[in-house]
Image: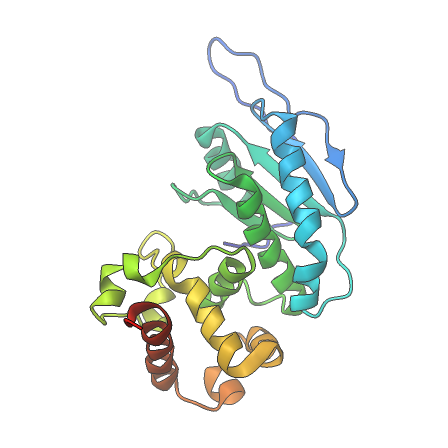
Amino acid sequence: MLQKIALITLLFFHCSENQAPTRIAPAEESLHFRTKLYDGVPASIAASVTDELERQYQRILADMKLDTLPVIGVEIWDDANNFLSAMEKNIGQRYPGATGYVKYETMYLLNRGHVPQAAVHEFAHIASLHVNPRIGNNPRWLWEALALYEAGDFVDPKSLSYMVSGDYPTLAELNASYNNDQRIYAVGYTLSEFILHNWGQDLFIQLIKTNGNIESVLGISVSEFEEQWYEFVKEKYLSVH
């Protein structure tokens, strides 16, 4: 998710009746990333995140056909309420259940699950914004599909009853807001995989640059794209070979 707001919160305080304000840990910087930790997130988490980001950095830039990026901010919270409070200050809205978002050249993460992989997902968002500054959630299906693919966030279609039954989502449905439909996180990897398999990286980049204009870039209709995507998924993952 992305909203362009000039103010970037550098320091976050959390107060209660019995608590003194809690400051973030001093920032640590690697070659391409600057990390800040909140709520006592251990330094080992920051190290695992920056190690993975640095490991994936050149690959993602090459995939996005970028030469360089500015130093990227990485801010990590441990407390979900504090994370959501900071989110509301940063972008004006809370998205309960979300564990990451980006704004300009900074990613914001909640210390849940496999944080390094989540960081790679958010970094792919930031990189895509340098391909097209207007791509953030525009369209949402492409914005998330490319990040899911770059981070290796694969969900086996056999585990999705709607895919097994052939009731696959349309792109219009996948463009619904985060709070209304989250199926893009389950199927986005295969959408990118399908595009790359059929049309290659150059046209994938063109889709990003044109905000997902399938007709002009790929030369087929949206409905044809949806049908061909499902046939690709069915053949590769759902058929018995």
